[in-house]
Amino acid sequence: MTFAPSLPAQTIPTPLQQFLKQYAHFDETDLRALAEGRPVAEVSETKVGDEVAVVGAIRVAVPREFFLQRFTDIVQFKREQAVQEVGKFGKPPAMKDLAGLQLHAKSVEDLQKCRVGKCALKLPGKDIQQFQKDISWAAPQVDDSVNRMFREVLLKRVHAYLESGNSGLADYDDKKPANSLARESTQLLGESAYLREFAPHLAECLHLFPACDSGIESFLYWSKENYGHGLKPVVSMTHVLIDRHPASEGKWIWEASKQLYADHYSDGSLGVTLMVNAPSENGKPSFYLIYLNRTRSDSLNGFFAFLVRGIIRGKARGELSDQLERIRTRMETQWNAEAATAGQSGGRLTRNEER
Image (cartoon, rainbow, N blue to C red):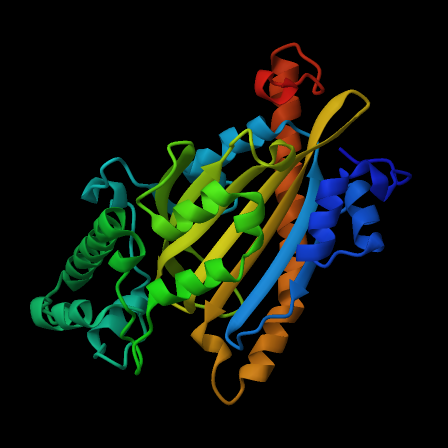
């Protein structure tokens, strides 16, 4: 759906306008573009040299609940984004949940050369040592052995996190000195101060997990994603938390995606999605989808860090804008198709959205 270009920025709820101005640094031009249905993406300045912060927003002509239903089916949602290897962890997580995961051939080669303090993959020291000790690298089926052990390592990390939260996140010993994922996660949350103000239940859960408010929904998933630009495929694990507390400002819905592991590039990442109902257009439901992400990467350190940051900043804005447009198009196409099949108009609200 394309919104009429005459829509003024004032159609955005005032509290959301204030939030976007303060925390996303949107100006009136950005707000007008958002109200008109165009994606808006910005790269923000950060206090930490190895960190990139992006924010994007778009108006989507479907009910929020429809989007959330699709998003929580994370395997299908990711596959629609061309992610071929992805899986959702069960409760409790088990090896079968990781059955589809295969390391890239280059990662298997890199693991053979791994040593504590010098490894192409991000792993704790004891796991690096285990790969050297227990894998017969000259064996004909070495790839199968490596993949099986790698899955065991990931499963062990998931269980440690579920039991102990941030303190269960192991350090990365791929370089010296080692890097603490728990520390990075805590600092990223600290830099997202708006969560404490607008979504305190979610902020508390991110900080104190597994001690969480019962109203917070959550699940964990893994994926192997190819980001292009000559980068290696990245295997990661993510904890998703959703806060639908009715006490949230203006009944805003919040979702946080906290990175629990990444085998390349990222030392920590926190993505936050905000969903705010928009005024209906021609009787059809819509909402504002706002995405904020902070990611820390060791690729942003070193002599050429300024050049790498410039490249990332230059690409991030356009790629986020494109991704938001693809999500909007996919959601609206699915919503309209289902509404037509059910003999309804695309503007009929779900029961949850009518409240």
